[in-house]
Image (cartoon, rainbow, N blue to C red; front, side):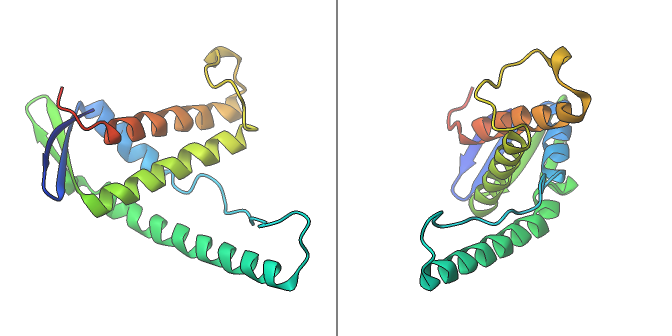
Length: 154
């Protein structure tokens, strides 16, 4: 996957058909995990802090729902134009930002599900079958994040 053209508000990425299918499959997995409550403070029992935590969690849940609704349009077939042996994926700046958020959520959720490992390069033969999907999602989402952020033709 490479940036083919950046024209104002539109980004055009060239990829092979397997990458296009992988991008659609990875994004289609969102959300990987259910939302978990975030505590602002582990020790502060002040009612105002508890209320801010409640508001934060409600806001994050709503944002996650919005991203989930957006996934279908982000990976819709009409965004992927077949050109000879390559596929061109076209996305505007706002949708690109949402796609990056979704990929990051997939990557972070997968990492958490795997127990937040420090070492990410592991022998796939040694990974329990119930965790293999999360290693794949972790690495593929990171791959696409990286290539969406690289701003040079190549």
